[in-house]
Image 1 (cartoon, rainbow, N blue to C red):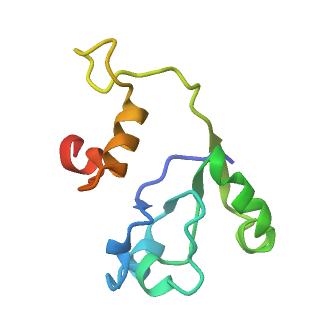
Image 2 (image 1 turned 60 degrees about the horizontal axis):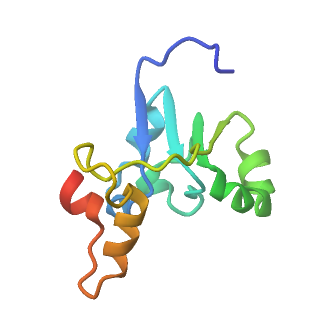
Length: 126
């Protein structure tokens, strides 16, 4: 399936709450390829996120969720290609110029747990 011709049009659908009320479902479903992330459902949200999935990129941490709902993910969407990924777990410095300081994951977790928590990716890297 991954050897098929490239898509002429592609919709990358996030699992963000920003999708609710968007009404983009029909437009998403018109794309030749529809890419989704992890276990974000389409059932019940078709108006906003569409119903088709060509490719679903799944973190290794979400695999148990896929297996708990096999009927939905593997039988209803038999044409979907699943790509499972896992990071190799090297410590990555938060900034390339601050070697020896906090690694990226520790920095995110520290800021999310702070009393005025904010996800550092959203506030700094976006």
